[in-house]
Image 1 (cartoon, each protein chain N blue to C red):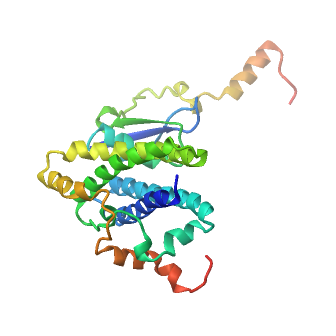
Image 2 (image 1 turned 30 degrees about the vertical axis):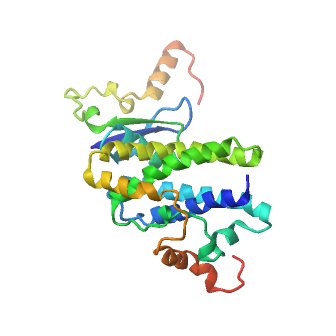
Image 3 (image 1 turned 135 degrees about the horizontal axis):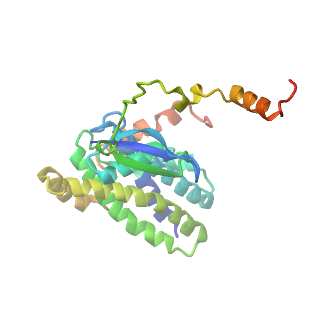
Length: 188
Length: 93
């Protein structure tokens, strides 16, 4: 498995985790707030594990990969970069589409010849199974809502769109890397 | 809709009330219960029960004060002492 392909997944997970965490404290109801925040945290956890794997190969660290690259070096799709707060229908549409696409990708990784990659993919998949369950429950609930259907149609083509970044990615990158950039040369 | 959640800390132990979650249906209730009461390894199993299914009773009649029905109404120590005296096996204490 090449490092660049893994980085693509790690970046998707990190950025989506970041975007989903923007719902913490403002989700439609308390239980969902806890649930969605937890999913966001899991995604960032998956990103961390993938970065560690790639970092070992590239001779760097997970933190440097996550936070010390230039915006144009991130390989995430524009889909995960979109800032969807406070649109819950769109957020759930993205969640659902992402989990579907992610499942296919993780399944492929599970077949990898590299036992480390395959092992990590299997671990990630066991957590993702619960994310898929969550996405499916919401899908079943919202599938007849015009707003949700529109959101699915609008977002579907963007799932694997990696040609350049969404305009709001610059702001996200600034926020995300601000602490590390605040003290030059610091090791945290 | 409110769901009451009971959790079991170790296999074989009694389930104890853990708290409640609000969820529109059973699947959501399961997911939220797992998230709030099982994610940190604090439970090996959960019971998720619609609140309406829990039948509460809080009236207990004891008009004739039959205190022998209650643990505090049956001073075993004294009764044992009497029985031992009758049987002649009282210990010197």
